[in-house]
Image 1 (spheres, rainbow, N blue to C red):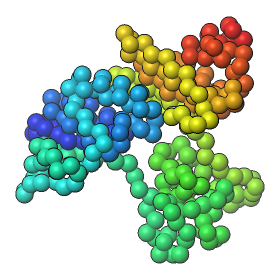
Image 2 (image 1 turned 135 degrees about the vertical axis):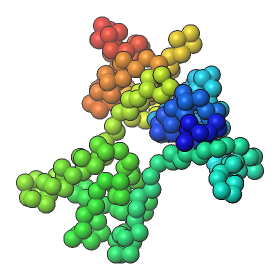
Image 3 (image 1 turned 120 degrees about the horizontal axis):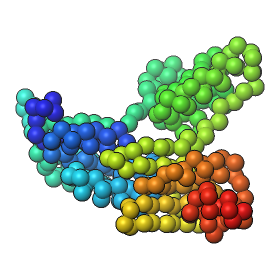
Image 4 (image 1 turned 90 degrees about the horizontal axis):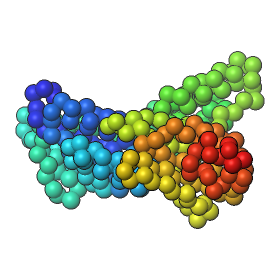
Length: 266
Protein backbone atom coordinates (compact mmCIF):
# COMPACT_ATOMS: atom_id res chain seq x y z
CA UNK A 1 0.00 0.00 0.00
CA UNK A 2 2.86 2.37 0.79
CA UNK A 3 3.96 2.20 -2.83
CA UNK A 4 0.55 3.41 -4.07
CA UNK A 5 -0.04 6.22 -1.58
CA UNK A 6 1.73 9.44 -0.62
CA UNK A 7 0.36 10.26 2.85
CA UNK A 8 0.02 8.12 5.97
CA UNK A 9 -1.28 8.52 9.51
CA UNK A 10 0.11 6.24 12.19
CA UNK A 11 -1.91 5.98 15.42
CA UNK A 12 0.18 5.09 18.45
CA UNK A 13 3.48 6.39 19.80
CA UNK A 14 4.83 3.16 21.26
CA UNK A 15 7.83 1.47 19.69
CA UNK A 16 5.76 -0.39 17.07
CA UNK A 17 4.08 2.84 15.97
CA UNK A 18 7.39 4.67 15.82
CA UNK A 19 9.01 1.90 13.80
CA UNK A 20 6.07 1.93 11.40
CA UNK A 21 6.24 5.71 11.02
CA UNK A 22 9.97 5.59 10.29
CA UNK A 23 9.53 2.74 7.81
CA UNK A 24 6.81 4.61 5.89
CA UNK A 25 8.93 7.77 5.90
CA UNK A 26 11.81 5.85 4.38
CA UNK A 27 9.46 4.76 1.60
CA UNK A 28 8.91 8.41 0.71
CA UNK A 29 5.54 8.96 2.37
CA UNK A 30 4.49 12.08 4.27
CA UNK A 31 3.80 10.65 7.75
CA UNK A 32 1.77 12.05 10.62
CA UNK A 33 1.96 10.17 13.92
CA UNK A 34 -0.78 10.57 16.55
CA UNK A 35 -0.22 9.67 20.20
CA UNK A 36 -2.79 9.99 22.97
CA UNK A 37 -0.19 10.54 25.73
CA UNK A 38 1.72 13.76 26.22
CA UNK A 39 5.03 12.28 24.99
CA UNK A 40 6.33 9.40 22.91
CA UNK A 41 7.16 6.02 24.44
CA UNK A 42 5.44 7.10 27.65
CA UNK A 43 5.83 3.60 29.14
CA UNK A 44 9.58 3.57 28.54
CA UNK A 45 10.69 7.22 28.66
CA UNK A 46 10.21 10.19 30.93
CA UNK A 47 8.78 13.42 29.53
CA UNK A 48 12.14 14.93 28.56
CA UNK A 49 13.31 11.73 26.91
CA UNK A 50 10.10 11.51 24.92
CA UNK A 51 10.40 15.12 23.81
CA UNK A 52 14.00 14.62 22.68
CA UNK A 53 12.97 11.58 20.65
CA UNK A 54 10.10 13.55 19.12
CA UNK A 55 12.48 16.36 18.17
CA UNK A 56 14.80 13.85 16.47
CA UNK A 57 11.96 12.24 14.48
CA UNK A 58 10.52 15.59 13.44
CA UNK A 59 13.94 16.62 12.15
CA UNK A 60 13.84 13.49 9.99
CA UNK A 61 10.49 14.53 8.55
CA UNK A 62 7.80 12.81 10.64
CA UNK A 63 4.98 15.11 11.76
CA UNK A 64 4.09 14.20 15.37
CA UNK A 65 0.99 15.25 17.32
CA UNK A 66 0.87 14.20 20.97
CA UNK A 67 -2.03 14.56 23.38
CA UNK A 68 -4.53 13.75 20.66
CA UNK A 69 -6.43 10.77 19.28
CA UNK A 70 -8.52 9.94 16.19
CA UNK A 71 -12.25 10.48 16.44
CA UNK A 72 -13.32 9.26 13.01
CA UNK A 73 -12.00 8.03 9.67
CA UNK A 74 -13.51 9.94 6.77
CA UNK A 75 -13.99 8.78 3.19
CA UNK A 76 -16.27 6.64 1.05
CA UNK A 77 -14.59 3.81 -0.81
CA UNK A 78 -11.29 4.54 0.95
CA UNK A 79 -10.03 6.71 3.77
CA UNK A 80 -9.35 10.32 2.87
CA UNK A 81 -8.86 11.99 6.24
CA UNK A 82 -8.66 11.39 9.97
CA UNK A 83 -10.79 13.56 12.24
CA UNK A 84 -9.07 14.21 15.59
CA UNK A 85 -10.72 14.67 18.96
CA UNK A 86 -10.21 18.45 18.66
CA UNK A 87 -12.08 18.33 15.28
CA UNK A 88 -8.86 18.88 13.27
CA UNK A 89 -8.80 17.01 9.93
CA UNK A 90 -5.59 15.33 8.74
CA UNK A 91 -5.65 14.35 5.05
CA UNK A 92 -4.27 10.87 4.39
CA UNK A 93 -4.31 7.93 2.00
CA UNK A 94 -3.43 5.28 4.58
CA UNK A 95 -4.07 4.76 8.31
CA UNK A 96 -2.07 2.33 10.42
CA UNK A 97 -3.06 1.54 14.02
CA UNK A 98 -0.34 0.49 16.46
CA UNK A 99 -2.15 1.03 19.74
CA UNK A 100 -1.16 -2.09 21.65
CA UNK A 101 -3.35 -4.92 22.83
CA UNK A 102 -6.42 -5.28 25.02
CA UNK A 103 -6.72 -8.55 26.97
CA UNK A 104 -9.48 -10.78 25.60
CA UNK A 105 -11.74 -11.38 28.60
CA UNK A 106 -15.13 -12.08 27.00
CA UNK A 107 -15.01 -15.85 27.45
CA UNK A 108 -13.68 -15.54 31.00
CA UNK A 109 -16.41 -13.06 31.99
CA UNK A 110 -19.06 -15.31 30.49
CA UNK A 111 -17.64 -18.18 32.54
CA UNK A 112 -17.94 -16.08 35.70
CA UNK A 113 -14.22 -15.52 36.27
CA UNK A 114 -13.12 -12.36 38.04
CA UNK A 115 -11.71 -9.82 35.59
CA UNK A 116 -10.41 -6.29 35.64
CA UNK A 117 -8.51 -5.14 32.56
CA UNK A 118 -7.45 -8.78 32.18
CA UNK A 119 -8.33 -12.11 33.77
CA UNK A 120 -7.23 -11.84 37.40
CA UNK A 121 -4.73 -14.50 38.49
CA UNK A 122 -2.69 -15.23 41.62
CA UNK A 123 1.00 -16.06 41.84
CA UNK A 124 0.40 -19.58 40.54
CA UNK A 125 -1.63 -18.27 37.58
CA UNK A 126 -4.91 -19.60 39.02
CA UNK A 127 -8.06 -17.61 38.27
CA UNK A 128 -10.96 -17.11 40.67
CA UNK A 129 -11.95 -20.67 39.72
CA UNK A 130 -9.10 -22.87 41.05
CA UNK A 131 -9.68 -25.38 38.24
CA UNK A 132 -8.87 -22.75 35.58
CA UNK A 133 -5.52 -21.09 34.93
CA UNK A 134 -4.64 -18.18 32.65
CA UNK A 135 -1.36 -16.79 31.37
CA UNK A 136 0.07 -14.46 28.76
CA UNK A 137 -1.60 -11.41 27.28
CA UNK A 138 -5.09 -12.23 28.59
CA UNK A 139 -4.18 -12.32 32.29
CA UNK A 140 -3.60 -9.68 34.97
CA UNK A 141 -1.42 -10.13 38.07
CA UNK A 142 -2.02 -7.36 40.57
CA UNK A 143 -2.24 -4.19 38.50
CA UNK A 144 -0.01 -5.53 35.72
CA UNK A 145 -1.01 -6.85 32.31
CA UNK A 146 1.46 -8.26 29.80
CA UNK A 147 2.09 -7.43 26.16
CA UNK A 148 5.51 -9.00 25.56
CA UNK A 149 6.49 -12.60 24.98
CA UNK A 150 9.08 -12.93 27.78
CA UNK A 151 6.59 -12.72 30.69
CA UNK A 152 4.51 -15.40 28.94
CA UNK A 153 7.50 -17.75 28.88
CA UNK A 154 8.14 -17.10 32.57
CA UNK A 155 4.49 -17.69 33.43
CA UNK A 156 4.41 -20.91 31.41
CA UNK A 157 7.44 -22.23 33.30
CA UNK A 158 5.82 -21.49 36.66
CA UNK A 159 2.46 -22.96 35.68
CA UNK A 160 4.04 -26.10 34.21
CA UNK A 161 5.90 -26.71 37.48
CA UNK A 162 2.73 -26.22 39.50
CA UNK A 163 0.61 -28.49 37.33
CA UNK A 164 3.12 -31.35 37.05
CA UNK A 165 4.01 -31.16 40.73
CA UNK A 166 7.73 -30.56 40.25
CA UNK A 167 7.55 -27.10 41.84
CA UNK A 168 4.10 -26.94 43.46
CA UNK A 169 4.92 -23.84 45.52
CA UNK A 170 6.40 -21.80 42.66
CA UNK A 171 4.99 -18.31 42.14
CA UNK A 172 5.20 -15.88 39.27
CA UNK A 173 6.26 -12.38 40.25
CA UNK A 174 6.27 -9.64 37.61
CA UNK A 175 9.72 -8.14 37.18
CA UNK A 176 10.89 -5.05 35.39
CA UNK A 177 12.27 -6.24 32.07
CA UNK A 178 14.74 -3.70 30.66
CA UNK A 179 13.74 -2.13 27.36
CA UNK A 180 16.55 -1.84 24.83
CA UNK A 181 15.76 -0.73 21.30
CA UNK A 182 16.70 1.65 18.53
CA UNK A 183 14.13 4.06 17.12
CA UNK A 184 14.94 6.07 13.99
CA UNK A 185 18.63 5.47 14.65
CA UNK A 186 18.47 6.54 18.32
CA UNK A 187 19.50 3.88 20.89
CA UNK A 188 17.12 3.77 23.88
CA UNK A 189 17.36 1.95 27.21
CA UNK A 190 15.01 2.07 30.17
CA UNK A 191 14.56 -0.01 33.28
CA UNK A 192 12.56 0.29 36.48
CA UNK A 193 10.92 3.56 37.47
CA UNK A 194 10.92 6.13 34.65
CA UNK A 195 9.49 9.24 36.34
CA UNK A 196 10.25 10.76 39.76
CA UNK A 197 7.82 10.74 42.66
CA UNK A 198 7.85 12.30 46.12
CA UNK A 199 10.28 9.70 47.48
CA UNK A 200 12.90 9.74 44.73
CA UNK A 201 15.62 12.11 43.63
CA UNK A 202 16.78 12.46 40.04
CA UNK A 203 20.26 12.64 38.60
CA UNK A 204 20.04 14.10 35.09
CA UNK A 205 22.88 14.37 32.59
CA UNK A 206 22.57 15.67 29.04
CA UNK A 207 25.03 16.21 26.19
CA UNK A 208 23.29 18.61 23.83
CA UNK A 209 25.94 18.33 21.10
CA UNK A 210 25.80 14.51 20.95
CA UNK A 211 22.06 14.31 21.75
CA UNK A 212 22.71 12.05 24.74
CA UNK A 213 20.37 12.03 27.73
CA UNK A 214 20.39 10.18 31.03
CA UNK A 215 17.99 10.25 33.98
CA UNK A 216 18.65 8.08 37.02
CA UNK A 217 16.15 7.74 39.87
CA UNK A 218 17.40 7.10 43.39
CA UNK A 219 15.62 6.24 46.62
CA UNK A 220 17.44 5.68 49.92
CA UNK A 221 20.83 5.41 48.18
CA UNK A 222 19.52 2.72 45.83
CA UNK A 223 18.91 3.02 42.13
CA UNK A 224 15.23 2.55 41.20
CA UNK A 225 15.18 3.55 37.54
CA UNK A 226 17.24 4.50 34.50
CA UNK A 227 16.33 6.22 31.22
CA UNK A 228 19.04 6.55 28.55
CA UNK A 229 18.94 8.02 25.04
CA UNK A 230 21.79 8.13 22.57
CA UNK A 231 24.43 6.37 24.66
CA UNK A 232 23.05 3.20 26.25
CA UNK A 233 26.30 1.31 26.89
CA UNK A 234 25.89 1.45 30.67
CA UNK A 235 22.24 0.37 30.58
CA UNK A 236 22.85 -3.28 31.59
CA UNK A 237 25.05 -2.16 34.49
CA UNK A 238 22.35 0.22 35.75
CA UNK A 239 19.77 -2.55 35.35
CA UNK A 240 21.86 -4.85 37.51
CA UNK A 241 22.11 -2.19 40.23
CA UNK A 242 18.32 -1.78 40.14
CA UNK A 243 17.62 -5.51 40.35
CA UNK A 244 20.16 -6.15 43.10
CA UNK A 245 19.23 -2.97 44.99
CA UNK A 246 22.89 -2.22 45.73
CA UNK A 247 23.81 0.62 48.06
CA UNK A 248 25.33 3.23 45.73
CA UNK A 249 26.48 5.71 48.41
CA UNK A 250 30.18 5.01 47.73
CA UNK A 251 29.92 6.22 44.15
CA UNK A 252 26.73 8.28 44.30
CA UNK A 253 28.47 11.40 42.94
CA UNK A 254 29.71 9.53 39.86
CA UNK A 255 26.59 7.48 39.08
CA UNK A 256 25.64 9.49 35.96
CA UNK A 257 29.02 8.74 34.35
CA UNK A 258 28.51 4.99 34.31
CA UNK A 259 30.19 1.77 35.30
CA UNK A 260 33.87 2.65 34.85
CA UNK A 261 33.74 5.85 36.90
CA UNK A 262 31.69 4.22 39.64
CA UNK A 263 33.92 1.17 39.94
CA UNK A 264 37.00 3.42 40.12
CA UNK A 265 35.38 5.54 42.84
CA UNK A 266 34.32 2.48 44.86
